[in-house]
Image (tube, rainbow, N blue to C red):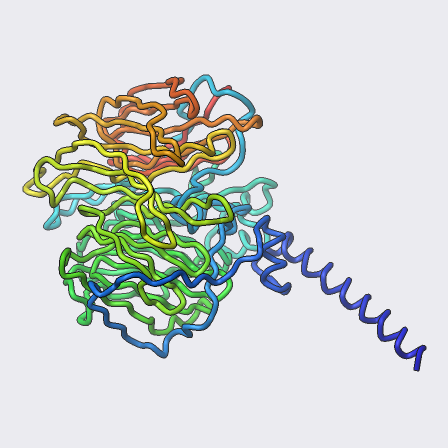
Length: 538
């Protein structure tokens, strides 16, 4: 009996060691395969043990809520967005993770001295005229590129991939949607096409998403109708084929507009794909493979005080909570498991800047949000606000008077359209934002704010306004540098702690898109026909 027990213990230890060893090996060698318990995988990702959160619900009586296809989701299945969105393998979504606060990867060697243009990629051009003008090529708002560091075995499966790339030791691929309707795949280092583009034949204004599970799925939202279809798409990059189309002109929706500028997220653990729409609905779809896409659970709502519908901003998420802002100025927290509102906040005006989540002491989530000057009239007040993510209570508010103008008969908004950027490392006490069209002019203003007190640390006057979100870069000592642009072609590189301008230079581009960076390389799209890469020189 004793001998049998000893053998049981020995074999148990051997099995456990083999299981852990295999799981840890797969985590790093084949990250799309995860066999260890969720909390162990999270610890290996550098995170903590995540938990479902049920904050106290505030008054949500202002919501007229409807839901459809309740059987399409399990309200008790844990959705747990962490601060890792497969970040070791790149930038898979707008602003780099579910908290929309990590648009860069890697480090600089030291203090930067210059920004040099390295390569240009030329997109197609769509000269067709729509009800809202001609959109051309290149990229617009938000138009951020993605950067994926494909493992060799996955890169070889990508349809049409040039054979030279998968075996490269440090191969990274830029993926970017264009206003011409094409999605391009570009070598990070050279700016050359890595494989044939795919197309939706309609303008893409927002940022595309790659499934963080690295299962080959690419999610694309349409910006403007210029043909029969108007909605969202999924491509299988292993076959090069479109496998799904969601019609944004949904008869159940309360708004007859089918665009999907908002950037979607996928919970890698459950496979739930969450995609807000400009028709006023939020779609939650469980995707377990790349072959069949089931019908979604649909959250349908309206707020009588601010009835204008449409979610163009990208939502932020942490654990099972998601934060959304819409065209009416409604901001709310949604439990992504139950798809029920937790709290509501009036954000004064149209909200296109992303919902940015910053985890502070004890991983308490705070929200940084901004509003446009649109529905307020030609002149109004733009705010950058810090909000308690669990209660919806305002912590502080920094504001500017801003204006809008008419362009081709439509309002061209001022205020805050660029996503707010929380600092990290030595800049962990600061948050950065951009106000557009300040003081009755076309100028912009870059501002650094103390995260805790809301006091302004420094400001930088900009020659023109900007809708593009700034990005943060760090050297090995933790010093922070901020890169941003304005709509008339100026690039800025500043010291994130002092506000000293290191580089300010006019280019021949029109910048509306948000950049990304890895190490000393920046990639950003422009209006017209260009996707470009800059290199930061030390």
